[in-house]
Length: 347
Image (cartoon, rainbow, N blue to C red; front, side, top):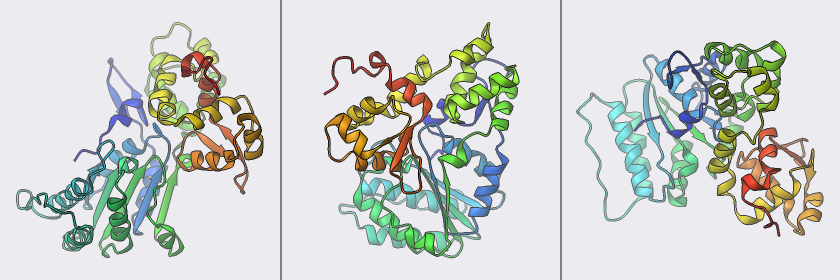
């Protein structure tokens, strides 16, 4: 299965080069090095919002894997079939473990046996000649509790020659705490994936875009280093008559950014979450009690925690996770009801 997903189209880590639609991968050596270091342990978790560059980072790392064998599985959208997912894992691992053409393709059975499937995958991993890495991309799309339980079991007993990399938009119930305590879990999160100001300047340079130092800094500040936001800005800046003015006016209400945030985040939220976001978006910071007063709810603290856990452009401001703020571009979008389709519909 291909590691490429629609996230790549949102520009996570890509820069424009000569010719319309031509893409060049931007090297992010610090993240590649982080993945290399993580591979000495058992599991690497890459957890960050949509458009953060998870897929393109893993694809770059795969091309530099050297002798390490990679078994890469992309979870299909809204995957609820445990057997389909695990057959994909088993067949991909078999293909990566042995000579091309020799792998026996596993077929569906009348009844899914999660324990037996985990044992089969574990055996295939252990039988691989040398080190092997299982990469599961878009893991947030796996909706089957049975499949997730089986995955947690596999991660807990990976063979000595195997490593797993999980890329997801939100953390899932995989009982990773024991691996974390044992020092066998490496985590790469949104803060790690954000572009630094230097990387933002490099992205603009390889895109052929010339901006003053102050304008480049402003663009980085507005996007908060979010890869898709930078990419969408770069696409709009290419050939723009007044790039400095564009950066000054760039916000989450920019058509391409708004469409992305609506499609990938806001449209997936239930009504009560949308209502909370819209009623609190003008605040520089919000906590549960304040949100309750503004929404008439009694569980806003829980919703805010869940939004941060889901990497939904909500960030805690204190170690105790009681105060929160929203990503600047997301706030821009929420403050324009005509874009969010909520004019006159707040309850």
